[in-house]
Amino acid sequence: MKCSNGSLRTMFAMGDLTVMCVMIFITSVFARVLRKSWNTNFKLLKSQWIVLCGTIICFSIMVYYILIIQQSILRNPVFVAIVIITVVSTLQIQLFYRKPEYLLTAKKLTLGTALAWCYFYGYLKIILPHIKRKMLEFSQEHKVKFEVDKLLILAPKTCMMPEKLDELNNLDNTLEFCRHLPIHTANRAGNINREYKSPVYNLKHKKSGKSQYIVVEGASNLQTLYDFKKNSKLSEEHFQQQRSLYINVVKELTRRYEYEGIYELLEYEHRMNGKAKCLSATIQNSIHELKSKLDMRSDKSDAN
Image 1 (cartoon, rainbow, N blue to C red):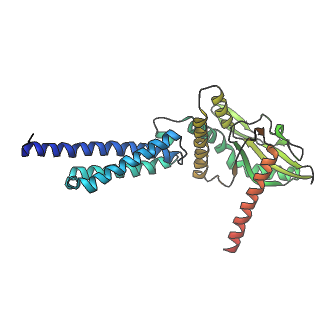
Image 2 (cartoon, rainbow, N blue to C red):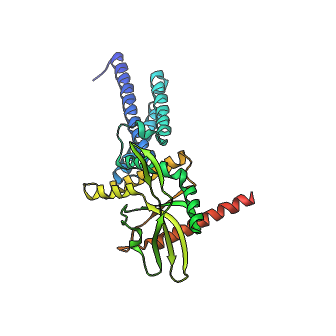
């Protein structure tokens, strides 16, 4: 069956239009997946990795098809303009969604990001600016020295924490509650002089008899995330993804307000070989690593 020149032009025009539509669709899907991947620092579920790889393959095939097979479409100014707009839009999405402010404008807040915002603005932003001053006051009053002048925040992978941190002691290391730092008060949502307490613990090593005073507590909203998992159908994969979002957003917000040198987030495995790990030993190892990093930084600064 023969076609006239007019019908051939129509077919080629329709072909160009089809390529444009498919290219726009693939680019928009690719941008959406890339945005979500960027948001979670590429900590994705298996299904999301499949979608991301699939969109990359489809995008590559379309680029190959246009550059090698159907080069005539490149002479179409409309198509060139569409490609430029989609590429620029993709870059803008990446830059925009990398900032913490994306949570304020996103249509759908995830559980992990919402809990992180509540924890930061409802607690950390209130106490962190005063924590070092409170530690100094405590040291002067009780004649003790803190092992690290930071608030240590526990963030177990399971998100489950005991009500009292000294519940997970062992024979060699014990974690004992001493008292609280001087109480910080603030007016909050009609609650006049609301009290905020930061606990001081004594980390003892029985063999050496050495005592280490630290200010340590758990990230309370991670416990909320754990409770949510227990009372819902949240899968383990989604649970860990929400935990990663929580950790990333807390770190982003503390960087934004320059609180990085005031606290330390201690991530650790709650269990090993099916048994609960000793929390005091875990904290002691984390303190040792933290002090080693601080010593390395001071050595570098002295060298400079």
